[in-house]
Length: 563
View 1 (cartoon, rainbow, N blue to C red):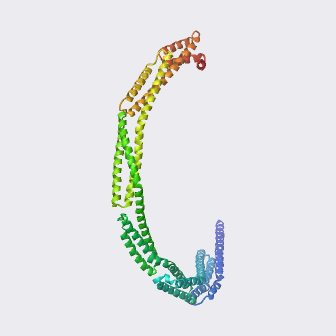
View 2 (view 1 turned 60 degrees about the vertical axis):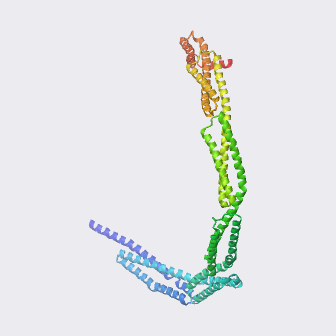
View 3 (view 1 turned 30 degrees about the vertical axis):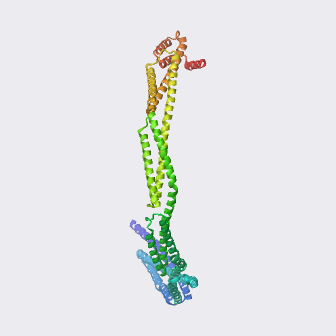
């Protein structure tokens, strides 16, 4: 029984599977059938009939016959083959040969795609042919109109074209022949050939138009303007030589000869109506001529600069020489009172040597100008460098003179600062003497002694001849640090001593009732007698704070009121 059920299940499964496969394949058959019908219904014949409006000869006739043959082949052969593929697929399905049916349908799909592509190509070529005919005729009419305008211009102004007229007329004849070829191509239905002819005419006519436009002015440039400019340059060159200009570096004669040779070549190109090449050559000539003009103008401007600036440079150089001589004498005078740094002395010698060199260069330049042996552009560069060196030297000289002036100012500043230090040290000593404290710590006496020694050393240094202000300033800074330190120490000691004494006196009221305070105050008094005023204050204050918190603030307020 179970076997029978299993067999029945397999049969049902097989039937179900076959049903869905058949349905899927039939759906694909229907799709391809509809595609085939849509291709059959395409208005290819109607589109091809548009060609009949054209001249059905030559290239047009060949294309039309080819397209019609392709369409007939599609209808009579390709689509019938598709129909057979679809019947075969259905037959395979009925026999449950689903794989074979699928292969046949894939082949039919590929064939239909190829047919669609062929039809699209026919449409594209058809549009190109019809559009080409219309556009070619339209473009040709414009070109003919343009051609007549150019021809008229050449006839009316042929005197402006000189020997090039015959070549230009020959080019126009060639264009007329192309127009005739175009008409013939249109008449014979060779519309694609006609399109190519229009493109060639358009290109040739544009080139001819450029020649007609440029040749008159280029002939004038070649035959008159540029030769005249070259003659002008040559004349100016010779005139400048007579005026004493040195122009060997310009090599103008050779340049003019080269330009004249180039002009002959350009003229021959122009007579052959090779306008583009001639134009490029003329632009090169103009660039070279501009360069010649620049070289000549450079010499003229250089002469103007040298002649104008040379006297003023001499005046400045003389003034700098005089100022340096004065500075040199000041240096000798300063050296009697002050020691100058070796670096500063080297600066003074460098200034003197540089001035000597600049004077020598100036005299050499003046001689070259008078003898007219060097180009003005070279003299200008030399003079500009001399001016630059003078400006730099003036700045260095000014800095050096300020150093000499600063020495005296530094001495006066040092003496004034020394007086201030003496006053500050004396103030510290008098404050200590007035305080009636029992004595000072040993270190304070040592610091006082060091401050005295440093002040004495600065004083002695200031009396030396010549004075070394650098050494003075070094010692002075040491003295400043020492005196300020001892002054601060002295003020701190006096403050601690005064406050410690006041706290001990205030604490006497607690001696009898508080033995611990009595002992602390005895210790504080001993520290006071040993000149340890800060420790004395701390000992007394600590003990009193235990019995009377805030006592230090109270004592400080009392002392402030008394002060």
